[in-house]
Length: 250
Length: 219
Image (tube, rainbow over all chains, first blue to last red; front, side):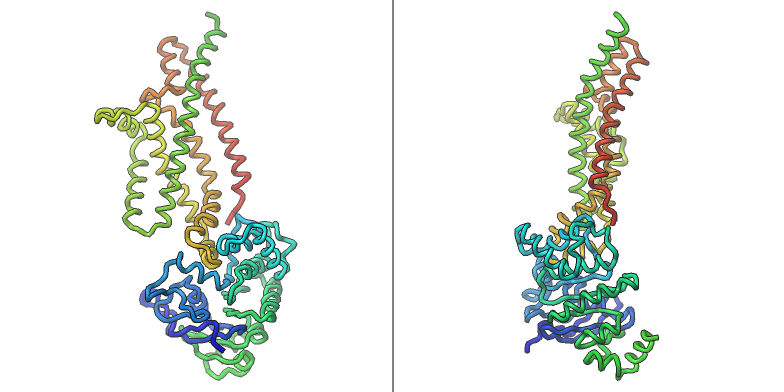
């Protein structure tokens, strides 16, 4: 089967600092990939390079065969990138809901502005997506009235409303109080069971082990080890992977 | 003449000026807010260093020269070059152009206060940079800028008193001409003070209502 996403030779430098030193991986349709690794390993940067929120220094990202961020050998600007970004739903560590809009409007606005749905249909779609994340009861609330876990679930609904080909999660539970982590992971698990393609940057190793098909362990801007989730997490081969997982467990 | 009829005459004279005071305030407020918003947008989002330098220079020049000097240049200076503006036009233009520099800063502060993630999330869902500005960033920046814009509006109302210096027939202009003919200094200027209060207090109230309606959102 052709990969849904394919990443080749991805590098990213900030000045003289090379954060990504050549990343290659493919994602099959429906596959769940977890990116794990110590902080500063480049896993968030890698994720943000996929939808060009960070512009890679070199390398290729292809979604369904279409080159992201480059057209006729020239880099695309943010306006040209908009339709490509719409194909990927992104969930941020800090939720980034828009506080001047209601919960429903947060979820509906892209459908209206990007896909041109009439307001009523966009609202119906938003309510449908809010039902998926169990947030229908706060549809008319302001994001500011919600707990962190609720905000993150609305953010997931907002990304789902894009009808994306894949979902990108950038440490979706790292900013949450411990007792709120579970409700977000539960929603993500439900999405995984629907067969969605997901790439998840996470420190939740148990979650990665149970939900992901494949785990990529990044360190120092490179993929140090990759493999089936259970295998990599339970019996890592590389010493650096072993050291990292030991630290996380204890 | 009885005291009452003297007072009535004074009040009638001053009220004629109050209309001009209000008109000059509103017109120059409209000009300065539109100009300031436009400048702030370009300064904040355009990538040209040339435009940035131009806008910064404009703001510095406008804010670091006394308003009266600007008014004299517009009214007397331009007239000697053959361009005669009416005193009211010069007043609106002068206060509006200065105000553009002031409100540019207020709007910029509003945009600058927004977390980076707000724009990123907008781009991530597929909004264009312009849509991100119009639908996501501007409404929030406006709310943040609203209280300082309110203070600016009241300041502007008070500043219209200086346009009497180029003979724009507003409250202070009438007051001074009545003082020279009637010598009722205390009565006239006290009435002027009350009149300004009667305009500025409702203006403040209107701004507070706007703030209560739109200004609650914090980010």
